Figure 1: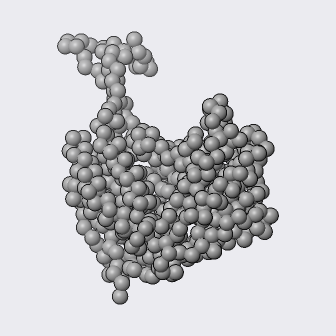
Figure 2: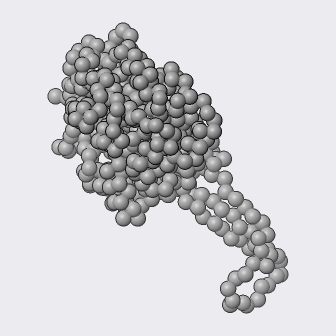
Figure 3: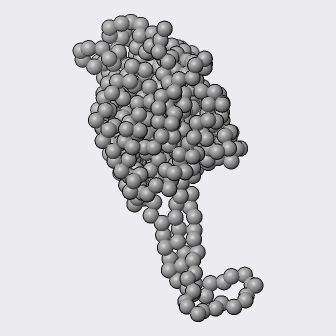
Length: 501
């Protein structure tokens, strides 16, 4: 019998006897390696009640004390990052360097949140009216929930947890049930760093747990990352129940290559950004827009580089492969199906990843890097989020046509332009309808002291993740108007509307 991964509640592991469970699978072998317990609505209610009590005390704790916990957690996570990365490799399938890089990017947000005392400074205006001062403060919301996806089981929770906790909130984290162990490891490190019991809880589960968080009256805010249909559902359900919601959805990220670009640089970038993490990134480049006349040469350079890529288990001995497996058999089959869809739509299949054999054990959910050329604008392969190692190439005659193509889709997460022309790049940055833009940078994920998020159907809500916008999302402003009368002074009776003087 496989072990059941417990929840993390009130600073300790909790397994609920008789509860529903789901399988934890190693995608490199297809084997079920464990089970994860699913939270019921009643358990979520118990956790939120505990979080409300613990969070109230945590929010009253001094900024100095809270920051000390942040610094301690940073040191613990840095020391144990290989352990967290190993859990990601075992359950998600990422190769070790990719898994470790994910944890490292999460650490950057922790380091940002260590400066929370500076970021929570309010304002003060003296003598705005005779004898009256006005000040502003930002205060925590209370209990907030984080619902994170399978593709970044450590980084995405670390986008939200450090900022939410540093600003004085209690957090209930619901990670993906497909690769849940990293969340428990991270929660244990927070407890070891001195975070009081109940301030951070991890509840595992499926839609029942998600819905319980979305409608619970004591949950003040929801942070979500996932597909666009689910992001829309989370936003609409959460806001209908009076919650503040930031729901980051799907993407179809374009990389525009102008004729003057360094094509070797562009080809390297397309391969790195298209196939890293087996394409299971919301910031992956999945559509390359080649502006005439460089399409043939660029496709040849990309195909040449793809020939040397390897796929295999990340925990195997020897040289690390370039790509791991996809997360589930169903997802692998869905992604592979787009290759047939592309051919049926008239595109040219240049590299068929279904013919690439994995290193070692042939079990698991494998698909090699795939390249489809002459993809028609607006076709399914172009317009739909594939979320796998499939790179589509579209040909356009001009910069204006490339811009119109990028702006035509409902997504607006990330994009990149490759060019030596500063004027063209500057124009693209101004005109493209996308939230994160790279100039000769294929995956423009902002540094932790900026904020992450897209436009249009890639974001529901008006606040991006981490950075300054994250601080504002997890706090609310309060303005205080104060008068300290001089001794023996009197204002008299005046029933008119107050006026400044």
